[in-house]
Length: 274
Ligand code: SF4
Image (cartoon, rainbow, N blue to C red; front, side, top):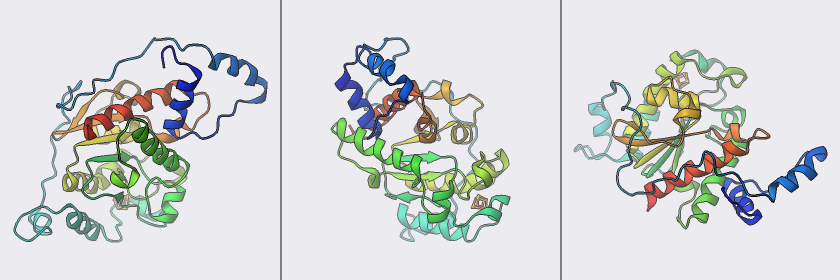
C-alpha cells in the first residue's frame, strides 16, 4: 500500500471482502482526507512469489507423533492407495459422537471441516463459533463470510481461478468452546489428533493457519502470530503460512492487520496455484 492511490485502497478493501466502508461520523472528514494521502512504505516486505519451496524462517515443528494407521490407508482402495475423500470419511467415523474432551458438553454439532478433499490449500482456524456450532460447518458466521470473500476476491484479483469451494477449511478443535473462549492446550492436543489425520489425508501443497491459537498448536510454538505471520513455516514437510484470524480483522481501526493478511493471502495463493 506504499504510495497507494484511492483506487488501490478500494481494491485492497474489495479483495479483503469489505463491501462497505464506513467511518464513524466525528472522524469521517479526517479519515477521508487521510485515505487520499499516500501510505508510508514502512513495514512493507515484498513477498517472494516463487513456485519453488519457500524458505522457512523457523525450524520445523517438533516430533510428529501421529502415524497413519493401517485402517486409514486401507480406507482408500484397499490396496494401500490413498483416497483423501474416503480417508476423511473414515476419520469422521472414528470421531463419531466424540466425548474425548469437555468441549462436547456445550456443542450442538461437531464441526468436522468441509471443502475439497483433494484441495491444494487448507485453511485451519482454532474452533467453531455459535453459527458454526448451529450449522455444523466451519467459517459460516461473520468471520467466515469475510474469509470466503477474502479467498474469492483475492484469487480473482490476482488472476487465480479458485473459489472457496476449491480449498478445504477446518479447525483445530471440532466443538465450540463455551463463550467463544480460546481452546485450552489440552483440548487442542486431544482434538488435534483428528486435525493431524485430516491434513495427512489431504496432504495439501500449503496450509494457511488463521490466528495465534491455531498456529501455536500446528507449529508447536509459543511465538505470537504478530511475529509469525507472513513467513513460511513447516508442518511435516508441508509449507505453512500463518496469518491473522478473520475475526481479528473485523475489529475497527485495524488497517495494518488487514493489509498484512491480504499480503499473506496473496503470497500463499501464488505459491500454491502459480
Ligand atoms: S473438541 Fe474434539 S476431542 Fe473434544 S469432544 Fe469435540 S470432537 Fe471430541
